[in-house]
Image (cartoon, rainbow, N blue to C red; front, side, top):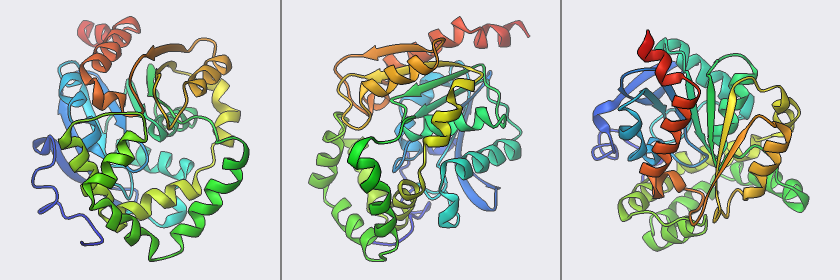
Amino acid sequence: MGAKLSWRVDGADWPNRGASRFVDAAGHRWHVQIMGSGPVALLAHGTGAATHSWRALMPILAQHFTIVAPDLPGHGFTEAPPRHRLSLPSMARDLAALCRQLDVKPQLAVGHSAGAAILARMSLDRSIDPALIVSLNGAFLPFGGVAALVLSPLAKALTFNPFVPRIFAWRGSDPAAVHRLIVGTGSTIDTEGERLYGKLVSSPEHVTAALQMMANWDLHPLVRDLPQLGPDLLLIAASNDRAIPVDVARRVREMLPKAKLELVQGYGHLVHEEVPGRIAATIVAAAVQFCIIALQHES
């Protein structure tokens, strides 16, 4: 079990490998997948995931958009920056630097979980200017109660212990443990998806980045600024999500009355992996409604 994922070995069977490239931006090397044509859609995955989470959704959306989907810093096959840069504002700046390096200006931004918060921060910072942000079980609000006092300090303590990521990674090599982890989010995904998550969490470097991201994650400034969000916002929330309760999306809609909430019954935190066709149809319909696709066709 190596500390770092190898593209030659671990990436040999990576989903949509033909769309992959490596790009230097913000001081480190990124793995990014680009496919399709049309207006640019930037996809940002959540904590502990990678581009594999878009494996089925991305080819469908690529029929309508130019998809740009990176592994976030320290995740998957993207190099890890210094630990202090695995924070929300720093990751937003680094992802903006990648967009500049690629010379892309997203008209649509789709984020899952923490990825949705990163895209919102980028928009608030005016480093991207999409017409629409689509949040898939977006992690916009801080944990409440005791969790707010415990989770971040605990994550900080874990990241400073060099043995902890290897212990997590050792557990990640057990398919049964990975299955329990996925089920714990309220989702049921295919065997291939579980295998890919197992590959990720078997890497101490990937686990370290996820823990450091959790340790540095402070959503209070985002909550303060969120009412100033410029783009339209579509909140897709899954009823069985055990990681981000539906109430989070409802509270965000109260903060942003123009936001639209769509509840997907019967699925969990990884809803975009469970029913990618349904999620793609919802995103495409929203893009048509907000004239993202139509404007491209008219030009």
